[in-house]
Image (cartoon, chains in turn brown, cyan):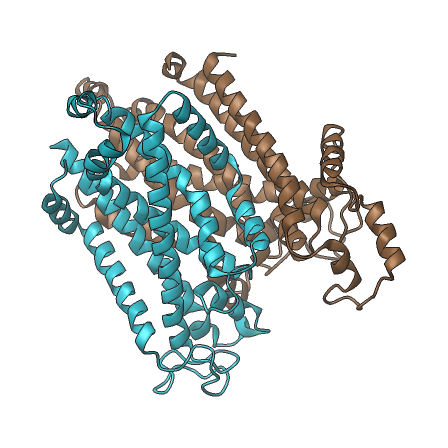
Length: 324
Length: 282
């Protein structure tokens, strides 16, 4: 590993440590506590736990130990891959996260790939001239400005209710025994609306980045040289300009990929989509410490891993970085 | 040293800057109006529930019979207040920390930049949600959380600028004559970097508006204030609203206002950025 990558790795390790400690401390500082929530949870039957049961539960979840010891147990659990036991779901956090993470991944990956393909295609094509660029840019900036949950709620009304094309919530039809292709289609049908929302809101910023990057590269002397040699326009556009212009996009894509998983929380809540984002929201509402920690950890590890992979990829594609 | 007149005329000469500036001014006027006058108090039951727009209620009423126009006005005040505070807070924090990191690049700079790296790699929205829950829902706390999470980006930009500026002959001469960090900061760096800081704070403002609306949408904003996010959530939570015509006057106005506010702030930021780059190009 080169020095540059080693330094990045050290930073990410530090981030991980900070995140783990924050992760441990913050939920415990949140007002309210999970046992209270258990004993008089909203919507459930108001059950009053007697003091002895409360004590037993406290020691069962390790909540009566000193903070440092709880932290030690938490770290030990992390090392062995145990994230604890969810208080509200009464299930291991590991398996809950494993159930939910693929759904988040499905949403973010497909929306990112969609929006980037569209952005690269349209961005290279529209970046031919600079005159009248505000006719293109003003609408793009406007749609970039619409927050994803606002766009989501409007599309929910238009495409879910007015034209009932898509289901309003969930990730698959309940109680259906569809199998094989039909099951895949059912999942795609449910994912379509959230993916459409997420990809529309990331399309416009990707489009703006592609466009400015392509415009910048088009002014390089070697592109002029290629044009003077008489190479056909598509070859110049895709083989000469786009290859160089895609480099900054890799970082942009990486950053987007890293943060969009967390950014999808609002959309998952809006469409009641069973991803990690909705899980974190539910965990906040029910003061479920282990679940909250687990979900937060998943987001952090995801960000670190994607960022590090982006760095590696960038290094292998752009040799100029090595000299820094 | 920037020529102020030049920056402002070049901001005005491009449509982006002009639309952004006019839009932000318009929103400010709306917010100020709501301080002294609104048709009804935003929480008061002013008529029958779900009344369509008419003479009495310009944008109709919501499920509780509250006047939507008054709520939109009030929401404008909340959003702009958050945007203004967050942009001032995060750009001044980012400026001082970034300038210090650029001016003392050895130890302090390395330490501060590590801090920035760490803060920027933490998942933002989950962190905002966690902090918002932890700090109890109050507008002040929402603002503080947003400042805490948005200064690192500003600091990083400012640091790279200061790193270059401190090696300029004029500033090297000032340092040689005995000018310390605070002197260089207020005599040179602030003047040199102020337009850049303005562009950054316009961007921070648009981020703050989105984040505040998102938090209120999740029900984690200030429950005592009617903000646009709260209105959107209220509309979506109302049973069966989406199947009634009422969504057009209950859901659409706050949705449009959030988007427009973000749009104007972003445009203002782009416009300032471009005006600045053109001046440097000359």
